[in-house]
Figure 1 (cartoon, rainbow, N blue to C red):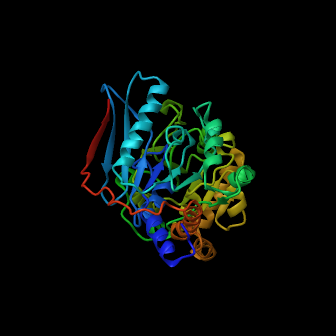
Figure 2: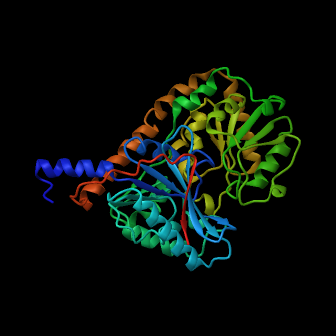
Figure 3: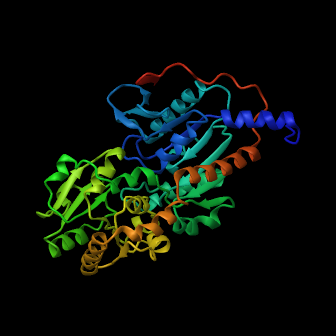
Length: 410
């Protein structure tokens, strides 16, 4: 196709905008609202988006897909169900066949494949994609229980990818020599959503009885948190309350630090977070300094700041890089220094909110809309380089999916 001609250019634009997107993620759509949800919601305004999640074991005798429609979004969550007891080879063949069945419903347009985990690339590598995107949020190979072959599969995905995004600059620096089209996109923020915490909002019932001052953390509670640090700081400051909001993953609940002033409130929705933040005097990021946190760029840093809360964090590399000189961010490595940093954060919180003016100016350039626009431009470049097939596109799959549709593979 000659892209220099107006007709070909118009045809290519129509094709690229019509291409469905399959997003492969190790995170479930309705687990916690993070980068994948922010971006896929925006892509879904211009194309069909399917969020292909990790498989779920089933007692059924065949493999099938569940396609879930959630209220408030046009993104469809795709959940493969694979019989228990099947070998890895059987499972991968079934996943590949289920993916083909899904694509068969979407018409002839070659899909855009967007990966958050390399582990799903093996059963998708055969797909004739219009573009392959790898959005590398974390160094998953360093996480607890990471598959031993993850690094090998990631190398194959990187070789195939048209463009790679990273979740921060540390991760970009670690991978930039592996690809000639790689771009860092550190954490963005929905500032308006979290700024609601600066107003008087109703106190959540389960937090109302916790005495102040309160310092809080929200997010997944897993091996990335320094549990010994949390326990030591809570012991050193018995007059302060430490509130943890979020699901526990990959660690036993019995291993969590316990103390009268440590409170675990469980998983909350994204919409509920500002109300919890409004009841905190400062926010916490007590991350361990280990392989799992070496390259993280926590989204909660700008979210905490947007809420008007001072932040106390361990010296995570990308936090130091981007926020080390920000008034309202306190960094400490040891338990003793972390406790002192909590004192300093609370002292700042008691003063006037003048320190937030510079914070708001900084956050103005970190919106998810701006990140999406920049990523979209790079995706469109990748689509142009690939040059979509110049053939009429069939009508995309439009029948109502309802709440759940099952597609079977015997």
